[in-house]
Image (cartoon, rainbow over all chains, first blue to last red; front, side, top):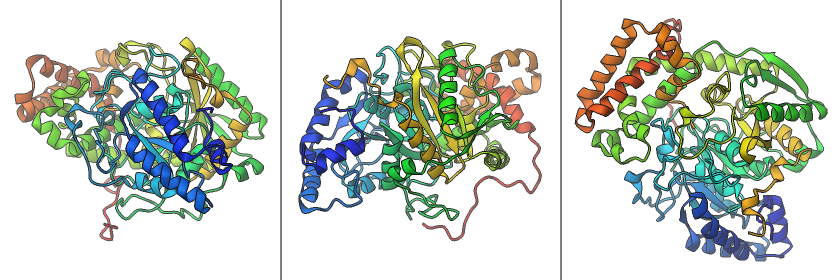
Length: 477
Length: 88
């Protein structure tokens, strides 16, 4: 049994009755319990619920209820900011360790309906990083580790999903991103992660960090797997007023990966000036190898595209500060933030709460201008490509601002494109310092996941980095 | 990872720029913000933490001023819209 199999490969095994969902689920539950603690990746293994859901999946297989259900019987995990009935939902933070909801988040509901099997609540940076953590050790579960080198961080704030998918403790997981929290752990952990368009996926039952930025998305073995999961979890939800529904701007929102492979699009792919010049050497080399793959597939590469002069970093910073301070106002006023793990987080809420209303509104007004400028880039190209992160994973035990000095991503593509609500995908594209993975990100106009995934699925058909497995967690381990 | 006010202040060049561009108005703003924190939440904070907060505000001031320097007109609306027909 290869734990690194994709959703399609696992589904084929289930349909051929080579393995039952219950057997498959127990296989991953055992891996979670065996390897999860080494990675600080797990909050709760949900064995009882998982076995019950797996038995239901097996009953559906036996009854032939399998059509258009690629996730039927497939195990998964969720970042521990999604409510799950009767199971602790800790938000990664000491003050919420005992928190239990009596309902499932919308995403969990949808995955249950699709027949997927919830096996674990996965570790995360406390409060999804809303108070400005500056160290990998920012969760009551300790610093989550990338399976490629246990002295380095798996990235955040979806730390557990990155580590757990990277070490094949689950075939896929759900993460969240306010500004970088899917793209970063995907890059640092060597997995493929999709940040959907803002509003594509209902956030009902998800911890709020910053309402106008928060998004949920899949972290998987491949872009094709992300496509499967996105289809299952997206759609309008009256409980989340930001959801955008199935039909957006007349665009289809789902095309099967097999159709994408047989109908590869020839796209215009832009590179933003300054986005690769100051990144780590191996990150840059691997990025241009990725660009050559894309060029060889018939895409037109448009170089030296200009980025906005508007203050992206300050804008996203003020919005996160103001919204997170409001979302956690009770916690801040109670003083219980002092029990958070990271030193910055212990005072960050107080600083954020000093954001003036007029500054927050200014940031949202400037955001309008930023969004217009960034969305206009997609009049010239279909996608933008960039290194997903400027460096490999950060070392555990050192503050972020003390390492990788002199390295820079240049323009803040992650911040800017999150302000614009644009979708992006991070895909492994090689290795850098200390055997750590690097990644390329592709970004599309809001609601254009189809073009994004078409390019990504075909890119991975021509490359093999996403199929590499970390030696410490070999398939036989 | 996400950017907060403290993190964008630590971006490349931000601290160096502070030494050159720091002006009394920015320092005054940082002090005022720190005083606001002290007034609201001082019971939860010791002297070292207040000093760190003051330093964080001072470091972020130049970037913050870039945001405040963006020209906006009366017609420039925030990037969200109240709807009387909200779904919930």
